[in-house]
Image 1 (spheres, rainbow over the protein chains, first blue to last red):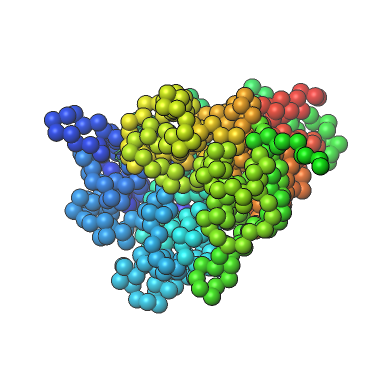
Image 2 (cartoon, each protein chain N blue to C red; image 1 turned 30 degrees about the vertical axis):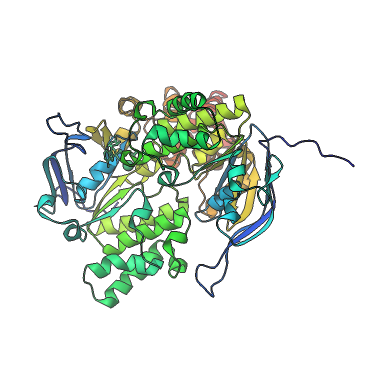
Length: 297
Length: 297
Ligand SMILES: Nc1ncnc2c1ncn2[C@@H]1O[C@H](COP(=O)(O)OP(=O)(O)OP(=O)(O)O)[C@@H](O)[C@H]1O
Ligand SMILES: [Mg+2]
């Protein structure tokens, strides 16, 4: 991939030993939802966050864009602490796609809704229009432009919410389960846009339960369990390690389970996609059955 | 006069169903959503509905208890009947004694002050006795891994936890027909397997009819007895998962951007590479067939 090599530059987003609690009952020891999370997001990276339901992923996302302020520790965006900035001031720097799309739809038409963000940035009308068209085209929803967003189906509403955030053009995107309820084609279009943006140095955080999707697109994976960061690494290392996943209450994909079952016969256990699996299997197959390979040729 | 034999309460009959939503603004066009859909589900069957975003899956779900067209208006043709009761003749409240629905958005399912109150809400409306309700609430929350959250406020749960509660609320109604729209989209891998397992055991032990709308092809391949694939409001394919996720239908689904199960995709990819005709749908079958192909030297 031609994405810029990370880590030589300043991180776009940094969390320094961040803890967070929703409750501060007087005198009580706070029950932390997130505990001492440190991470850095470098230009061009797409970092996936995986974890069980309730492990703290959405809480982490809300801390990244300033919707929540850390109880302890610091969140820095472009080197600056979110504590000192309002959510509106942060919006041009971090785009946030909510887990529930209806939390960000309110205008009477799809086009108006998508225009809301860039207009609020104070951009000239022509530039707003250009961004709206680009976002609608990228997600193949130009035909919905005049419809009422809340009357669309769930997948449609999610695409409109995504278009609105893409139109902001923020250099950091936080995507909380962006493909849930979307068909394959729509998800593919979203990741094409993300890939283009990463090539220009933008970075993204992707929260998802779809490990095949994470395997296909993430440059790094972070595993959260019980509010703690319990593992971090390349997708191949994290997603194909059933024991590591089990420690976080997660399970590997069917493809990974199959690869592990066939490992004794020579199929590598760390294949990440159907394509990789098929290639590896074919190699083993031709080795163990040289004659039939001949016959075929 | 010949009287027809009684139809079991869990039989779902959809015959020649076409539906358009009313125009979104005055002077606008009606919005066509479903076009001549017919299918039948018998007690104890799990019928999967899949397709592109906006293909009509959610509309079809809403037609099964009469919300479409009773709440939505629009133009409705054809017949939808549950256990012989036509949705045009019976009020939504009456249909609700047979059909429980889990909507795509967990929050729209949750109304109460506590998790337990939310799960009790459905059976209360059905006039179930308090002691029976208490037993069902405990049972249903336990099935979805939320037993520890009885007294929690639904608004303060994570997205996946809310989804689990919404499913528990439908389970507690112990309906003859259970309609679920993307029930596993927000669930972590083990949570999704747990819920699909519960649905399977309800179908097997209580003869509950399950209608499962989902983009998760692996879940459908592993759990549905019959699949209906929608695109543009029409049925473009139907059959058992091994029939739908194979051969030309598989190619057609992929070309329309509809996800197919990973194991089916792997079978097809391998068949193009090695001289075999694999047709596995589950990891276990794949393991057996792929190992066997390597050992026949
Ligand atoms: N507004 C809130 N007030 C209090 N507690 C909350 C609130 N939102 C979430 N929580 C709790 O914080 C924990 C983490 O929730 P969070 O939404 O971050 O999880 P998540 O990893 O995003 O889960 P999911 O996969 O289900 O979306 C959960 O135990 C949840 O009940
Ligand atoms: Mg979440």
